[in-house]
Amino acid sequence: QVQLVQSGSEVKKPGASVKISCKASGYSFTGYAINWVRRAPGRGLEWMGWINTNTGNPTYAQVFTGRFVFSLDTSVSTAYLQINSLKAEDTAEYYCARTLGDDWYFDFWGRGTLVTVSS
Amino acid sequence: QSVLTQPPSASGTPGQRITISCSGSSSNIGSNYVYWYQQLPGTAPKLLIYRDNQRPSGVPDRFSGSRSGTSASLAISGLRSEDEADYYCAAWDDSLSGFYVFGTGTKVTVL
Image (cartoon, rainbow over all chains, first blue to last red):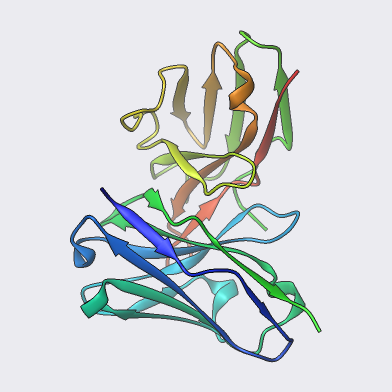
């Protein structure tokens, strides 16, 4: 069965970096793009962007350029989200989800990784 | 700030039918499919409706979606206590270099 398994919760200090993983199983990893979605406390879902699992080419939503980095390790069917220079406002639940081609619906999601940024 | 606007809340009693609206523009709902997601408390979002009105396998037919012009709506009939969740519409937006956008979200309460 299709699964996206995310790494566990993280607690970081402002200015640090964090790298979240999303390991896919049950399907051909390079057949679907991986998207990243954020939900901050008291806010709704925000699409952060996506990464082409064939080429490794990332696309970032305008708000998530600069400190956010998407990457892959196709040998272990895993996508990564790295956030640099963490700020308190980066405290949120981060989800990975897959999409197929130009059909922009997220049919399978990871369970989420909670990142807490606090001094 | 989302370009898809939803009412912040909706409520109904068990068995009732409720609808959630999603208002957009010509660059998103007016020219692209609409999707709906349900997020139960403490869980990941779940795809509820794709391509305006299609239900994935396993989603009850109590949930239905529609799109007209630059607006869309989600209807929940036979409301049940387990439907209490946050609901989000979403669509691709063709403006700028293109981006995916979620609606502002609607909290559904079953009274």
